[in-house]
Length: 123
Image (cartoon, rainbow, N blue to C red):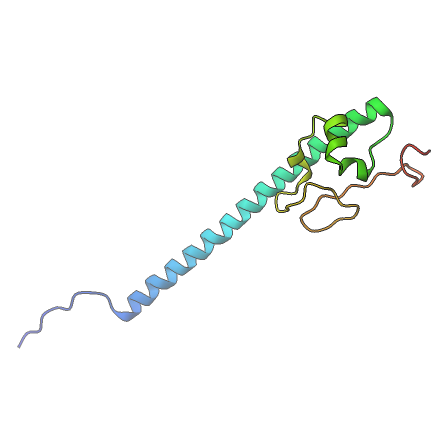
C-alpha cells in the first residue's frame, strides 16, 4: 500500500524558524536602543551649545558668568538669559529643569570659577 505524502513542517523546521525570528528580533531591539541613545546624545549636544551661547552672551554683557543659584531660578533666567528655554536645562532622560553642582545621572551639571579657582566675578 502506498502512503500519502505528509504535508506540513517538522518540529526541527519550526524550531529553526523560531530561532531565526528570535535572532532578528534581538537585532532590531538592540539597533533601536542604539538609535535612541544617539538621538538623546544629539539632543544633549544641542542643549550644551545653546547653554554655552546664552552664557557667553550673559558674560559679554556683565563680564561674569551666572551662579548656579541664578541659573536654577526660573525668574532670574526669564530676565537675564531669555534666549535659553527651560527645556534646555533638562537632560533628555531626566525630569529636572535645574542644573546640579556635580555630575549626576540624567541631570546637567554647572560650575563656574576663575582660572585661580575663585568664583567668577570675585577675581
